Image 1 (tube, rainbow, N blue to C red):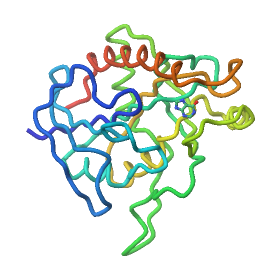
Image 2 (image 1 turned 30 degrees about the horizontal axis):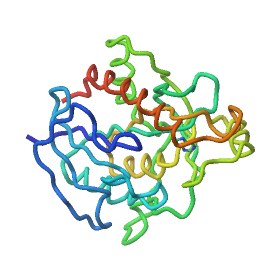
Image 3 (image 1 turned 45 degrees about the vertical axis):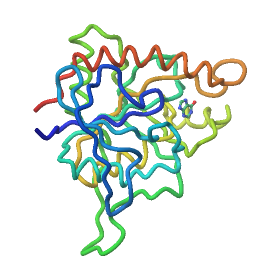
Image 4 (image 1 turned 90 degrees about the horizontal axis):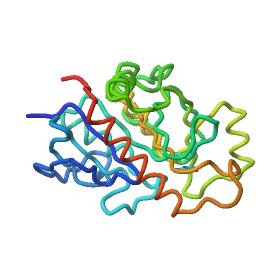
Length: 247
Ligand code: HPA
């Protein structure tokens, strides 16, 4: 059976716990190879396709991910909706380490990424609507899952996508905060807009790995990121257990 749901796993989720792999498929797209094989299997009884955004092993940095190939491969596989899991830094007060947030808006600070399917052999210039960058019904299904499972999440937020791979300066984070960002990550764009261009439903579960630069004293360490992600991913597992994405 074709699974209509895909999970795009980020840092800390190269392979989800409880995911039972049935088969893998190494595919090629007109835009090149996706980050890894598509893994078909079941997660808590639901059939899903899983793709590790940074590759398996985790070796592709955010600015080198072939976002176009990743989403194209999922579309070609018959997927209709994509749940993107993303490790982020927390900027505003509600977004502390290990929190799960379901953002509803984004700001794109990236540059130089292949960010559209609409650039060659066009019959006409296309401008997609991006008023709601995340599919409202898919966001709601995640919020409903949290409610059903009694799992604490933050059901809002503005995700700011930076270029990486370096983390930000405190001055950059303050600027982002003034812009209205609650969360900072490096992979949210162009993933979200590419999904919209090829009519895939798309929403993000952001897992806070650390306070963003300058939001706590001292440097951000990889050890702290890994510890918080472990905790956050355990919460995420509970959320997915209660998730009913549709048929
Ligand atoms: N900044 C950008 N991306 C991130 C961060 C951060 O602080 N933490 C995890 N991903």
